[in-house]
Image (cartoon, rainbow, N blue to C red; front, side, top):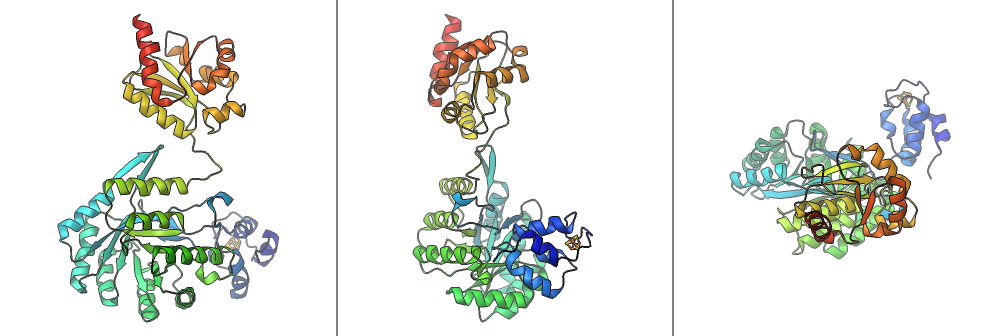
Length: 448
Ligand code: SF4
């Protein structure tokens, strides 16, 4: 049962020393109550207070930071089962797997791809997250050499996959302080793997085919001082993964089995249906997804799905209102107006670029609502457009006074004309038709 902030405050040392990163004990108590802080951040708590607070205030799924530096990422710290209940916070890392039996130049090329490849969707740069190196050869030297080959290309978050403590130790020499994930401690190897993870400060994956085994393993690891853990559910099939992953999420967020409150690790390479496994991992609570290097199409599908699932459903993705230039518009260039819903902006921007007609795009603040919704909700109005024209000083940019508005905003055309003094042209409803519209209404109209 979760404690309230005031109950938590009563248990704190009340030194207001800020060592936890919060300005006062009370603000720290409020964060603890919201599951947004860890009791370990306060060095003055007694063991007794820690054990009372720990179970009820830690995020139900422990946040685990993977890697160090610019490409590091955090997983876990999720609070809900369904995205629409609140949001999912930390998107899963998509990690390309290589083997230490592959030629070094091939391994380096894959690492280079993870380092460099990205694509931009609705204004966000999407990237792969790291490299998993598997000790397929069984050789200590080959494993260390493969890790060194990846490290020579970039400081990417890594997963070291081996059953051999010797191979892991040899590989870790090349990783410095970069905290690779170690995969995977089982009931037989738990002690040795915990020792390595503790010595190098690495997150550790524990692997077991039942939830009971996993809970036992996490308990042992924590008792050994390793608490940055991930769970490999050893699924026998995709259906088995859904069952186990859903059960882990439910038992963790309700704090029914706190020992399962760790991010889930999924190796999507084990079956034939890798793309399906990745999609299931993204939608069903995996936090680290290991894959074979993906084709361009599969990569885009995976990263688009991940972006969609991990946006806040209560906050539409928004553009900053303002005057945007498509190409190098001159003083006679068309001026189009639309809303600040990102998807609208980027869709329209793409079609406008394709027309090769330089123009201005005025983005007004409808709080991220689409045109149709903004008109229906009264968020798009003539005064909003008038104020945006003034604020972004469009009259200094063009000699004409003609404004093209979206087709779905046509009910406002008369009022916009009255409020702004600009002549309003009602554009198409479908952004795909904007090219034809501009050629007919603007270019030909001007020429004619
Ligand atoms: Fe209070 Fe502990 Fe934070 Fe210091 S470290 S401000 S005592 S909660």
